[in-house]
Length: 80
Image (tube, rainbow, N blue to C red; front, side, top):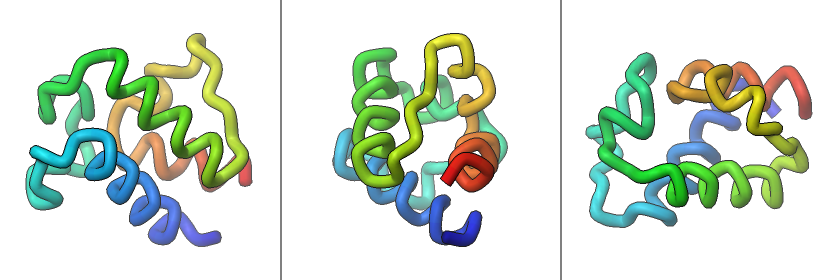
């Protein structure tokens, strides 16, 4: 799975968890929680959904490594 495919999967899960967000609001290099104003529970739900879909678990110690769309796509791509 390419990084672009992973990115699309991440965007899909963000939109599933927070349907009030428009895809155009998701910026590649901005902190997902802050820029989209989602709480930590929704962020955790996104990571859980991605774990189910991609088979990659993100430990709490690595949350900073998945703070932006680009970081998250890179993190998952390297572990699939």
